[in-house]
Image (cartoon, rainbow, N blue to C red; front, side, top):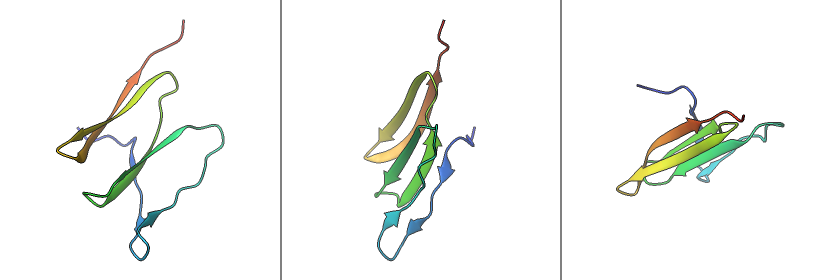
Length: 70
């Protein structure tokens, strides 16, 4: 199952950098994987955990565990 929460970011090949604006009112997680040559951005959950899982030195998945305050 593919998630649409994480958006692929373009990597500037000339200087190997990633650029993304700060979004007021949001907490964003930027994951840069130099092994796979990929970068993604995802909005962190409002209450809960945003977990970056790795396997064999590469980014494997981003997990979102949400909860609700009582």
